[in-house]
Length: 90
Image (cartoon, rainbow, N blue to C red):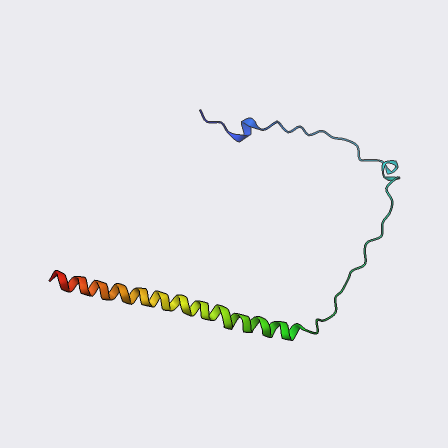
């Protein structure tokens, strides 16, 4: 038996109502919008960018290099093992 979601959901009933009156909003206080806060230019922005670039080249580059070398050594090991096993089979 297949049950569809539309069979489980409650039916939606729409009805027209008059808009709220002004008296219903009479007790709500008026609050002015908050002023926008603008932060000035960061005096350390240049050093933050330089530190981020230094971090990238120091850690991420070397980590990528280690992954590449690991893949290279695995490929060479497989190549050597495949050549040794093929020479043994002949």
